[in-house]
Length: 450
Image (cartoon, rainbow, N blue to C red; front, side, top):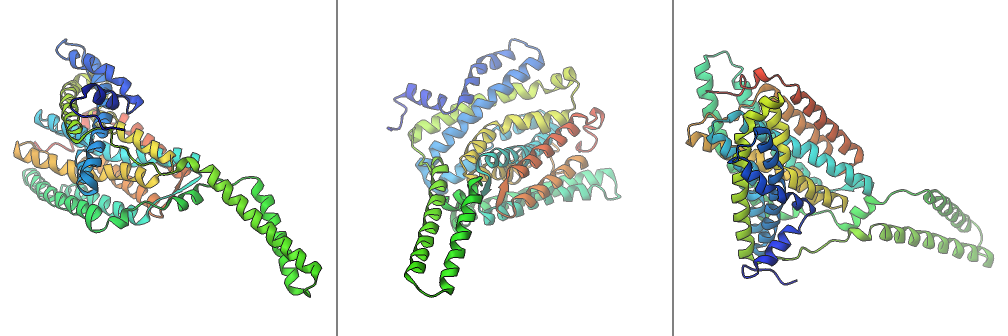
């Protein structure tokens, strides 16, 4: 396929639009953008721009992937990592400028929780239903776990600091200073992580060989018991032959036993190959030129910025009309917007038994938010004099801690199945119910440092 360039705008448009069925929601974009100047109700403005951002996030991911194919593994990986959460970053910056610190904090926490429980859980569940048991690189999973633990440490320390018996003014000033210093070190850790993953220890993040993934995904059949009986009887016959005199009859029996074992083993191998032929590795194809990818990315980011602006401005009206807490909007609703493209992409590759890639999308996105997006927004708040800190509410801090603990337990052995995915999905559902019932009058008591 010949890559489409800037001189072929219709072909670029066609390939980017047809990259996913989710892009049918692009029809909502004009209405969503027009809803604000047309003075639609806040609920309508929020809902329209909510659905408009979902396909835009998918196109943004497509443009980023095409850029990565041109720029190589190292630089391409860096761009993927940096631009993978542009939606969260744009929504955060716009909300921060408006002084919506609580919305920023809850949306960041919600993105981490949604990626680790909902996205990863869906990958494990749907991938496990199709592939029985799935394996992935345990070394990479352990690296992810240690980085997530580091991220949780950065939220636990401000929470513990605020429990000290001291003057409120001193606690607020100290919490902001601690958050700013911690944010700088988190960015250093993130840069080191990218260098570690993309340069010095690439082998530790390599995918599990296809043959091993096929073996784990092979589903047991009823005929396996019969085959096992045949193998046992053949082995018993072979043992009997070894203990008796070598006669022509015994030699013929032994040969028959060996042939029977060989036929059974070949049959099992053939079944394995036939059941997993569809999982062969696919080579990614370059569909856009480098400059076409860059222009598509810039246009998409601009449209996302407009929709995100209207989305943030309608949050107050939404919470009042639907009687929702701002925490529920940030933790659950905005998190679903930011992770829509990751959710679809991760499940798609998980069903294809590419769990290393799925885990990199789900857990890797959480790491990017915790170690890159959150500290960047904290520093931006420092610059524009907004009290953005790493001090989340005690309730949210506990939820983050338990989420990381649960995910680390599940991914630590390098194997997963549908039951573990169901555990994560139900955990996310319980958290969603808890935030739905979250009292509105305590939304700003724990997180505001004004």
